[in-house]
Amino acid sequence: MLHIVDDEEVIRDSLTWLAQSRSIDAQAYDSGAAFLSALDTQTEFDPEGECVLLDVRMPDISGSVLFDTLTARGLTQRLPVIFLTGHGDVPMAVDTLKRGAFDFFEKPFNDNKLMDRVQEALEASREAGAAAQVHARLASLSIREREVLDLILAGKMNKVIADELGISMRTVEVHRAHIFDKMGVKTAVELARLLK
Image (cartoon, rainbow, N blue to C red; front, side, top):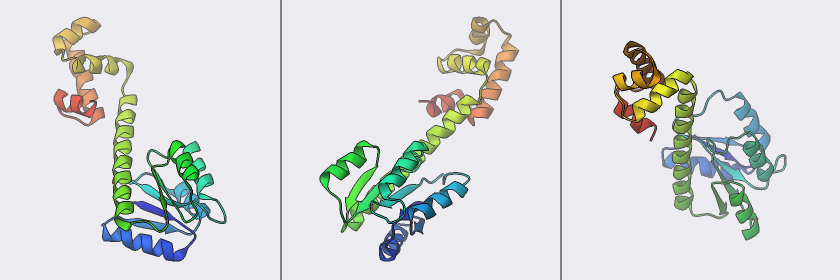
């Protein structure tokens, strides 16, 4: 999902059409406040990724302030921000990129280059979402399951794991089944691939 935040209707319409021409779902907002309000009611991120095209100068909340809000909430990995401005300068662009913006475009911009960057930002968002999901799954493991997981990843067989941890082989098998279930995998190879 591409979120377009710009106070100019013609820009919002143009960017929405441009996104749709690339088969990218887009939602337009006429202000930073409208975007934040929608974000506050959103219960989960789009698994296909999300990205924000953000105008720098807006009357209610500037793009810079909105970006700082997203950064303070820890959302810029899942919501990469591409700034758009008709009043940009090199120091402003450098500053926003140093602060973690995904990119910075001056109006008028090259449509294809902008949409290429949007697609790259959506991919980065997807990857961040997948990494967050794996992290959440790992956090759901018990301490003992983490110990067994580490030994599975080291290529150890159940009997060796049981000996090293001082538990029965049957207990290792139960932990292994729980680990695979929680991590959403069927084999140790899939587990290793997920955690590489």
